[in-house]
Image (cartoon, rainbow, N blue to C red):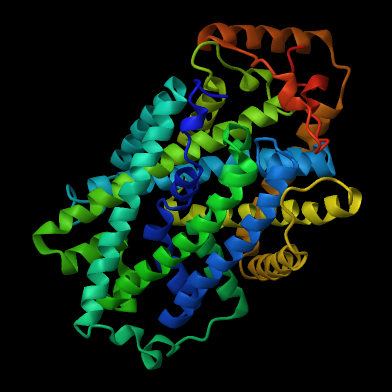
Length: 489
């Protein structure tokens, strides 16, 4: 899929660009609040990177063993079957990716409007309207050209690293001047309120939002040149780089801000800039806005590919598996992602959404990595270009079980709502996909709707290259049996 410029895609840029978004400018407050001390917060950030590294190594094996775009959804569908894959797809399309996009878009608008409304929070409608405009603009870009979308990703990834580099350099200058009282062991690990294990689990969930995106290259595996080489290379470079940058950024924050100041700030980077940059403080909200703009572009790019993969399997309307006849971009999938995000923008608040997203994210990660172990048992002789040590998925799953268990105990409502949303997909699956013989009027309606969508978006089914289908990994594309509720044929 693409406009003939897939070779221009930079896996490292897409990978790093998807991880570094709004999270590092939002999550420090939540991590500190739940961990209870500066020292423990920094430990959470480092361990969060280590956990992401374990997970990404497992995904590298899955990505080259089952070389299909769609990430978690494609792997779980291939390993566990349609229902489990559909539930992951359902929760991702319904809440996980639209909510993440909404959080990043709201962060973008808040930082853009911050210089205009210096003494108060930006108006509710202003942030929503600006967020929607940003989403619509980037949706249009992604609909027009893969080359343009990836070029934006490359440029804004550099911008993100420069913005965080500025924070880190200024923070290190402060430390060199002796301003590191909050970072001394005596102060950093002094705990006024001893956090429960459940609170520490919630701190990890907050940090995981900043690291979310480490699996997104698996959503576009088919569009990556030489994935067997470039996929693990991007992972091994990006995860340590992001962990290093995030940890240093938090150290920089604490070099000039007390824990109380950070917890009371609604825009950590802006508060940091106001304290240290003087008349140049305007640089900080602009830098964060640029960072989040690139993050929105990356999430749109990859989440639309999830919709595309789901439709190709017959789990979503077949219109979403179509691409523009000339530009080869998945326009219907992009429009659905944009519309779902705008709905979430109208009903949610930034901080209230993060725990929902993080819980469902970790649930999906755990099921997928459990699938890796099951697949090894199910097909032990299958050719695996990358095969990680068994301790890697086992260690990840042990951490995963503890994290979700204590999170469910500490925030039963938040986690319970996430589970309920996922389970609502069960009746939809049996009615829409599993029920093969439906009334003729249903097929007539879906055929008519698909035809209308094709005319409006100028889209067709992509031509499948037989050479791409034949591979030693034995994966099969179930789209040939596309006869579910969502199919037009």
